[in-house]
Image (cartoon, rainbow, N blue to C red; front, side):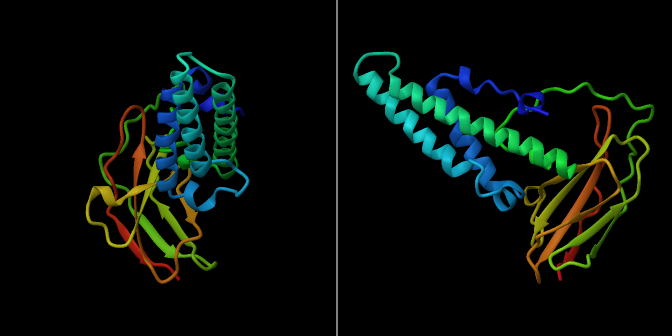
Amino acid sequence: MNASDRFLMNHAAMAPLQLATWLNDAATLQDAHSKISTQIDHWVPWSPQFRSHKESIESELQKALALDVRTTKELQAAISAAVDDVNINAAYLVIRAKCEKDEAWLHNNGYTLKEKAKRVYDRPVSTSSLALRVKNGPNAGQVILSWTRDPGAGSYQLQICKGHPQGEESFVDYAYLTKVRTTADSLERASWYYFRIRSVGNNENGPWSEAVGIIVT
């Protein structure tokens, strides 16, 4: 699976300032991403490299404007280097999502997801919240989660909050799942985490479950 199968990969066609803005926005989102910021492999270009590319593009663009030309070899080289790293980053996220069967890697990362053909479900999602169960797993920093099945759901959206939630903004996406059981790993031990889940169906979402908290062991 290529990155272009899931993301709109039009970065090479962006104007220099548009690409620089995208790089900065993507860096901010990936810094805040619960998985990318903690689990990305060291060799993968991401927010530090994106910000460096942004600065290079802006610097070379200013030099080109000072010369009263639209572009220079140096500006084109800066853009090419940025696009190469964007393509590597995007491909990596798609591979991680596929290998781990976890679409959280594909959301809130700066990329625009391509519209996929949506499956039509015979039933609407349930109007009742799912019953979420949370317990510590056998490994340190691991939590096991399970919930009731919704026949009208195509997937389930799982969110996480570290510490006691102060409102809706406290929760962030952790995973989009098709099964009714999963594990959350690499959590900070002796810390409170809260989880909630809802059904995702055909152009509709079910209500959020009650947030369930646990102290990770």
